[in-house]
Length: 333
Figure 1 (cartoon, rainbow, N blue to C red):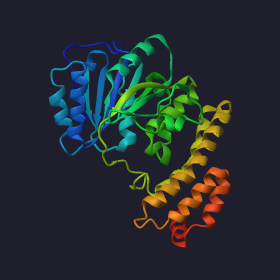
Figure 2 (figure 1 turned 120 degrees about the vertical axis):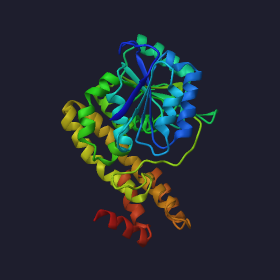
Figure 3 (figure 1 turned 45 degrees about the vertical axis):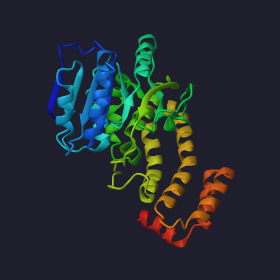
């Protein structure tokens, strides 16, 4: 990583703050600078360290962030010396975090001040590995809310969206070698925040969801995330590649964490398989401009709710149009 600059009014020991508020960003200069200004206006940098890593943007993101951060304390702006995709940028957030905990937000979302203060109070008095916070969409609708313990069956929906995620950074650092070793796995590559959450959950099941809003979604922008083949994560070929990557990931998790976690891993992968068909169905519809798959979609939905995954897949295949079958066959070769 090059062009590292730490903007502070005064020096602080690394353990001065329990919490780092972290943002990975790429080519969103206007939005992320607005969000940094929001952090400063809320004085969140007085309560926690701020870490923003620019993924070698081409729109002046890094320079504009430095301008906003100039003269402010506890704000660190870093820039990758090349584009390392979301996976590499999120990995750097954990590697450069010097706090006990890290709260990650997407660059299009804003931190909720009361949520940050709640998180600080909670981690001062409790030892936790991972917390999935609620996200408020556009000022009203709550996403991912609910006070409950995280299990193998809800770890994915609890961490798939990359904002309002609070990790014990020291626990996360311990599993960085595993994350790096699985960089070529489609799931880990596309969803690194989930990859860390899953590994931290297997490391220590002291994880939960909360109704407390930790993040506010303010903007809806087109995703810049690419799969290992350079495609969109929601395209059919990518969804099938993600399906293929599940079992190898489960095997690698078992090898890493040992047989004592095998039942949790099996529960997790059963959940993943049960949801995969609906994702493939959605990808099929999204890629068909003329909605020619409506009848297939209705049939799939009917069987999806009535039968287990394997039975659904066999039924869905029987009513799937030939040109779609050919597309799926092509992705297998």
